[in-house]
Image: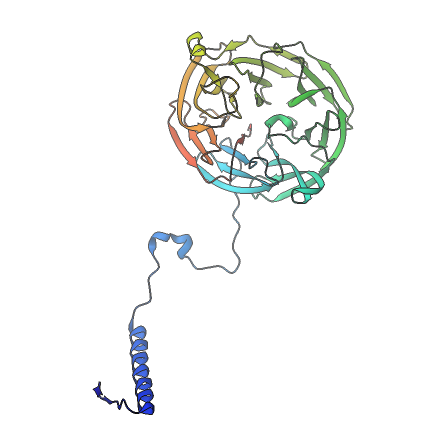
Length: 409
């Protein structure tokens, strides 16, 4: 047999192997020659400069820009997961800036100067069991580096995450957190000296609303507010306000509160809007109004979601998350936001969100953006509250994001 100049004698095993080896060697040489002459493969340009740039031996960790009025923090407690995540977001550019790991059911608080945020944490020695450890993290808002870790007694109130179960004082010098068991109490943390001060006993009252001059308020079961004054050593004075809502008009879990204005806005299950101005001198209560007309109430319009109300201090405007719903479904998401003049109760707008939204918030500047977070979509939607137009979106935010923290700069 003659093949490509090679004579192969098929009856001879030795010649058959030698010819095969020579043929294989020739093919390999041709392949190598072809490879040497071919151009190097091109990197697809659509991958962007981040992928195609030269690798560095030591990657550079970028810092976020200084916090401004459009900074917002989205917390994903992950439906009672033992760990959680806090996402720092630029609401003006719809851009994720950073992520901070946190413990079980954390409370996130933004400082009033925007320089740091605090996270009240709980972790367990064996992930979901074992010795419990409660502590406060202070985190730099630009670098996201840890500033300090402050140990606190193991008793922080662990419930489905409620915004007002922990708070910074108006001057950011103290941090307050709530204890439920073994008895109601409030913990005082000295932020300036990065140390725990004392647990102080309080009646069966909940939520923490800070006012100036080391004062805070709590909501009590009889429908009044408890006013508490404290000092750096944990000495306190307490007194109750008048009852401001009837016992059978149930209030939603997450009211809106502006510490700078001292304004508390608290909707009930049926859409009654209660307001109070809180100061070191006491509390004054506004006239109650209902968010819906008589016809709308017949059509079953009610507030609903997790953080259902937000207050814009510069324009004195209330925004309420609502939908048509059956009674006792007030924790389910909603698709609409209603806007009201806080002073008169007059409705001035209605926004159709186009998404199932759990919580809303608003930036505290003259040209605000409205934030709407959806646990189902795992996304933050951003709107122009003046037009109702959706202007941005940040998605892939953990497993079930529901909490919004907006700094009052």
